[in-house]
Every structure is written in structure tokens, then in C-alpha cells.
Length: 341
Image (tube, rainbow, N blue to C red; front, top):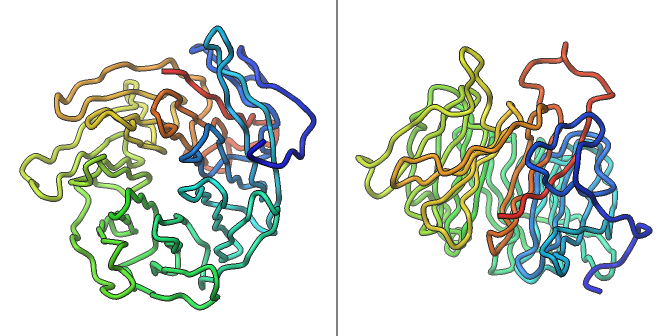
């Protein structure tokens, strides 16, 4: 019983739900948030999935496989913040969950004791937060800073000024890549960041529009970027001549935002993109090849993430505001689905 239970047993299911088409027959998690999901995070030690959302909640599910190999799930925990949450991340031992959001705070929750610490505060909303393997917490904010925290003190142990607001961040220890407004990308060694607060590499996105999503290569030699222009970039930091961009998530003249990009663990060159067209696609970066496109579930995918072993792919469906406020209404669905690879 790795996590305390706050819900009665309510297992997920397959098939369409609340108007969402489920053409890939993926598993639908129970007890979905009341607003769009901002971030998904898998525990490194188990198939527990956390989701932060604009309804100010964090929800956690246990995802399992039955004897026939079918995906099953149970909602096991939920708690609320006092502002919309933009990011969540498990610790490397799965015992803690860090969150950041529009209350400007970095918070850390002990999942067993069900107690929360206010670790520190930014001047503006916290867009991304990561619990590092060295025990420190890294946060990126719309206040144009990257901050390093120790959970035992509320003053940042290091603050790094960035060129602009943080729009996306990914960490594969000991490397962190941070994408800011004005299309800047910076890479840091988080192992030495406390004492050497300078980037190891910095450059400009090869995409024309702002960065929506970023994912480091498994070998940390580069990263993939997604943007609102229906285009993805593969950027090699050490061999820039190998970098390229390609079009995706387009249908005729309709261009969709790339809201999520993530590399599959255990597969050096395989990654997924997910977009506002409601579809996700698996790619092979070195061969520049589309491995498999999946059918659209009609509504935008707002977040997506592989689990640690790479056999499960979670994605959240909801409104991403890519079509502006005129197309929003409160009856739009919000669901999280899990695809088994």
C-alpha cells in the first residue's frame, strides 16, 4: 500500500467517455480533474501517476496490469492548492511530490505522512518544478529566474537570472534544459549549479514561434522542442549540424500546437509528440521517421508522459486555449488516458 487512499475503489475503463472519442481504445482513468491538466508525472519506483491541473488539484492513480495484460487503475490520493497548479514531479524514491503554480510557491508533499511543506516562493507563477536526485528542488518561473531549493530552508540556495520567462523545462540528471520566452534555450549541470550558476550551453530555438514543450535526449546530448506552429525541432547541442525541424500535427491548412514531447525510456531515439489536434505520434529521430500515428480523440492533448519503463504512455485531454476563449465552455471534457505500448 504505497500511498494513502482517499477515494473509494473506482477503477478506470475503456471506451468513449464524456464526449471524448477513444479510437485507440486506451484506458481512461477514474476521478479526472475538473479542469485541464497542466502536467503529468510518473513515479520512478512504481506505476503511480500524478496530475496537476488548473482546478487547483493534484490527483494520483495507481496503474496496474491484470492477468490478461489489460490496463487497470485506481484513484488513490487527491489534494488541493489555493491556486491553479502548473507542474508536478515525484522524487526519485517516489515518497515526495513537488508542485508549483499560480500561487508563486514551490511546495513539497510527503505522500505517506500527508503533510505539505512550503519550500519557497517566486515573484510570479512557477511554470516547472523538478525534484533532483541530489535532494534539491529546481524550479523555473515566469519571473525569469531558475531557483534551487533545499526543503529545510525557505530561502533559495541559488537563483539564476534567465533571459525571459520559463515556458518549459526538462531534467535528466544531471542535465537540465530550460526554454524561455524569446525562443531561448539554456542547459545547466544541476549537480554543480549551486556553486556554478552558469549555463553549460545556450542557444536559440530553430522554430519560428515560442516553445511549448521540451524533452532531453536520453543521452543528454540534445533535445526535442514543440511549438504552436505545428512543427518540432531536433536539436543536437554537441553537433549542431545534425539539428533539423519537421512539420507534424497538421491537417491541410489546419496547424496544431505541439503541447507535449517526451522520449521513451529505454529507447534512445524514440519519442512522442502530442498536440491540440487530439492525436499523439511516435517518431524515430535518427531515421527521421514517423513510427506510428495514433487516431485523434477530437479534443486537444494538454500533457503527456511515458512511465519509467516506457511501456505505458499517459496523456491528458482537455481544452488548451489554442483556439482562444470563444471556443471554451464549462462542459468541455477533461480526461486522462493511458496507452499500453
